[in-house]
Length: 390
Ligand code: NZQ
Ligand code: ZN
Image 1: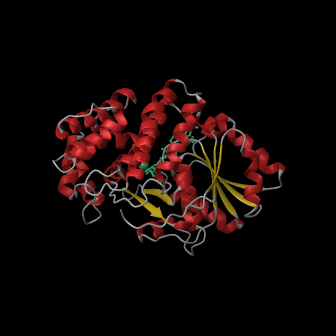
Image 2: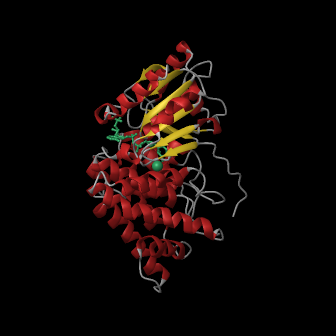
Image 3: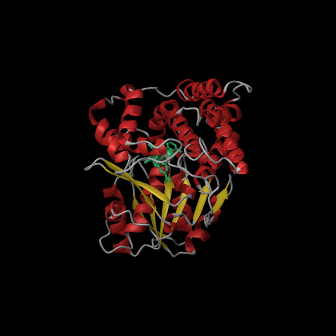
């Protein structure tokens, strides 16, 4: 177990009747708000009207950045930063899923720099300690962006999708009402659920030191919750218990509680970000395709006991088997969850992806080095895993 510092200053209002606290929280930062949202789902659901009315009746001045793309672009964040600079915005209010919240973080960080260009921060790997405050209203249980210090920004001109991190990017306040996710399409529910699942698995001990038992049990509980509630939310979109479990699992998976003290490489995420950078695919779907293949690739005498334990605890694989056989059953259970229960297409070729860019994607995924984790992955390993996904 590694030493760690835990500090997450995000104040979360969770549940059905919390949105009335929005004005009082925004007014702590000032009266000028940049409202950021995506392609219009919040207008259809009525959440946009609720938020705008609340702000207007409390004398808050609203500026808008709309049209944030899934896999948010640096150019969109830069537009928001310009508005902030011109209008002296006090606080950035994100209303949407991970893309909208990530874009808002990019806006907030770029707005306090001289250039106002978020890509300067991303490409120089700057750790952001200064930014405008961000407040988030979450509509999709998936990324954990509502409670973490990361923003994943895409530059489609260069096929790059890179994480920008920093303590100043953690939202100051997050509103999580599971009802706001009732309107999510089934496909996004499935993709979001698998994103949550993989955030935990990517940080799970699959080799080496497994002494932090409390964290292991906690991680397994969160993955079990996703396995239990995702299919319910897909069948019954307005099932509050299912949406609530997924939403809080989304936040817990990446708010630093579940990876405190662990050694992790986030291998699947590194590989998936290249897929969305080159092909603009949905993040959770890319993860679902990569994860079972990655598990197969790293399966060895060293990793088998931990993969088997994960299978027993999360999917109820029978106990008492040879670890290698047990681990294979665990991997089968992951595939079954992704491709049958969640109904996601199983192969990259199903998404129109071929091996044309695999070599360069594999090199980018390793950032000039290797991906650390239960088995170190060099570019040639990553390329081999991509080929297994075809
Ligand atoms: O744009 P709108 O119209 O809002 O529609 C969105 C979008 O089309 C729609 N949607 C969201 N909430 C909805 C809804 N539709 C109906 N009802 C609702 N309640 O769903 C689509 C996808 O939204 P998006 O925000 O892109 O999804 P998600 O939350 O999965 O975010 C994905 C982005 O986050 C990054 C991913 O790489 C990707 O770019 N990630 C961010 C992380 C972080 N900040 O820590 C970590 C993750 O690993 C991830 O990389
Ligand atoms: Zn993710």
